[in-house]
Image (cartoon, each protein chain N blue to C red):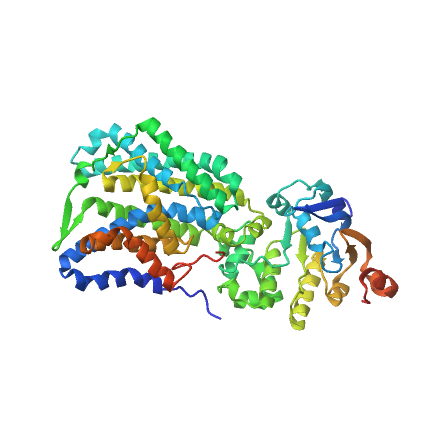
Length: 327
Length: 241
């Protein structure tokens, strides 16, 4: 019998995909630019998907309404950054960063609070009923989008990057957008925090145990329902944070942006193994890279390249790269 | 202080449309080992799950240490210092043996904070727990998993230990190991309620016995008395102990 053997193979997918396209692209600097842009995009997608991964992983809830928290986070960011215009137009990087971090913090609090209500009134009555979950959470998202239109209006709102985060830095011949570097740092921080919490704390232990056998966790004296609510709130808050990152990446927000990103998120968590944080990170990085490579090489197939990626992964591992035990 | 730690009075349990328990009356004396005997499908597991609040009683009263726990949620019941080992053992397969035990150690946030003296005692009872400390629990054999399940239940002192068929599917050598473990637990004054189908196991450990049939307790008394009364055994269980 072996101690826990970590499965390293999925980790090789990201460098493998990158190296496979290098000869096709030809220019090393273009390849480096595309790869770094893809990894940054992947990190943003990971932040958005990490919340749904947690919610699905522990609670077995198919939350098709996750996108509304992304849109909510993005719209809250427009308001907060709008109030902090003095800081965002300043050429001082630190003032810019403070403004962005303030927007992120407020977006997380608002999305988390709305997530609390969403869990109580929409999700709780349909625990354990997947079909009803899909229907009612989609309904919840439609209502959420309409409420966003009531508060912020139905039109697209521009969200320019703060002054010091515009432009790119050069790494050799490769250009890396400054904002993408920030996104990578935030994504890495979110991943490290989630990995540490899940792997090194008792709360994380409870979450991992709850994924496998909720009843036994309760029989050990823990109130798993409270843990469920906390996970839903954290998942919603992470979606809000992802919404801010995505909105600044796109530099505009629309009430429908959550629904548009939803498909991408589900591709990521299916590739990841339906509930695995590490799997979601790999899935997100692959999706980000694929979008950038196909956008450059074959723009006409870029739209369905991620579906093709998912199909290829599922042919290799039908339950995703890091399948969670009880699925 | 009442002589009985746990009391069930007229307990009925429904699971969906099915009426499983039809008024169970059961007394579990403090510091004794009580065995719940009965054929398959008569309500033994349901009785344990009802005590733990996993399938709440639809009628009747469950009292623990003088307190009515009938309407309490499972975590509240467990926090009254009751440990439960289900029939399927409830092992978290993806967690290590250490993590399985750490979950049950409510006072400890890290493995290093677990009571080392008690862990040493558990290792002496179940050497496999120490041997496979950092291994995934899912890779243990059936007998090792059962040892882990019981070890997890006793990782901290509990007033009542409820175990559903601890000898199920185990090799004779492991059953003897398990009997030693329960005998030592009894000696510490822990009250134990076991569901068991292995008659020798029940006879060697039991102080009290309750025989359940069709969702009712049809006999209760000293294990020794039942073990010596072949006619009663035939009448209640259709076999001789």
